[in-house]
Image 1 (cartoon, rainbow, N blue to C red):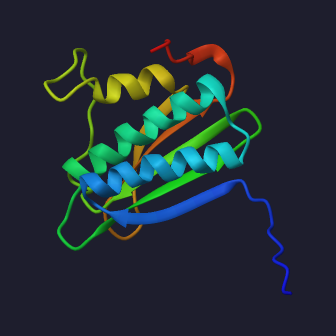
Image 2 (cartoon, rainbow, N blue to C red):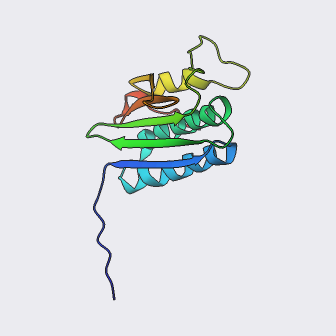
Length: 143
């Protein structure tokens, strides 16, 4: 019998199709990874919501036919850094004061993250990132 040795890592990266289905899969796989890291409760819910919003934005606003988007999460001692990269560098998100017709968008990200922003990618596109604390300071309200 061949045994597998796994090395625990604090980084998670995957590429998915820039579609609603890809965005949904990004959220589901991020939730599983958070669980594997032992991130639970309101911190996990906050990170899940941030991934869902950023992945949805990447699929809706950052989509280029034939190009994927990338999800990257890194677990620190007291936070999870979430990054979503897409191929549309010219379509940078901008925060609004009121919810738009599609939902709460980046207002939700700003409320749940200690910091968020946008950076250019080296070759093409952009990366939208957010840092979600593992403490209760930005707790998700009960459903």
